Image (cartoon, helix red, strand yellow):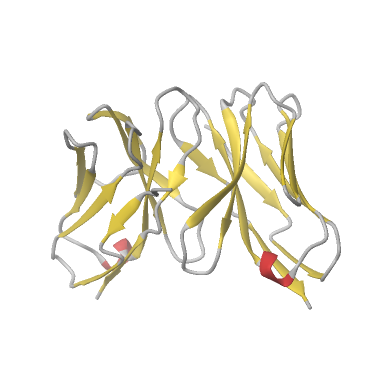
Length: 111
Length: 113
């Protein structure tokens, strides 16, 4: 059974700082790994999708990496802004179907 | 661009009542997924459909059922509601092919009183 863990559970940083969110998964036989953003009580916004054959994906200030052999993914956020404050969830896709989510990292960027 | 549409956005029901949640996937997406997110928890997979057939089943209670219709929209039917069913219910859809990106709707917040 796939298990996904995210560290840290919460993170508070000053505006402008670069930061890294960590995600680990137990089953390396994944199809892909997806990073989401969730604002309180809101839906899930897909940020980046990394296929199992890829090492990293970039979108604007976001960069996600994937290391299947070690069961790890990281989300790098450059030059953080208060608007980046949200919960960030990673989810592993095993079997090409369901996503298994981590518990999320609650990020606060202070002005 | 069209997104996944869920209705209703909010729903309040009493214990033992029934509820029906609807999901309209992105056009040309053939796979629909349902997830349940309890307060302070991560989303848990319930069930998925591919081309109108159930493709995967997770931790969906026997009191719940779902189906995907010919126009690819899906409905989640929940009966004998319990207080613990109060949660945010998400629908997601993806395009043909294994391991394609899942796009989520805004969710339906169900409150059971």
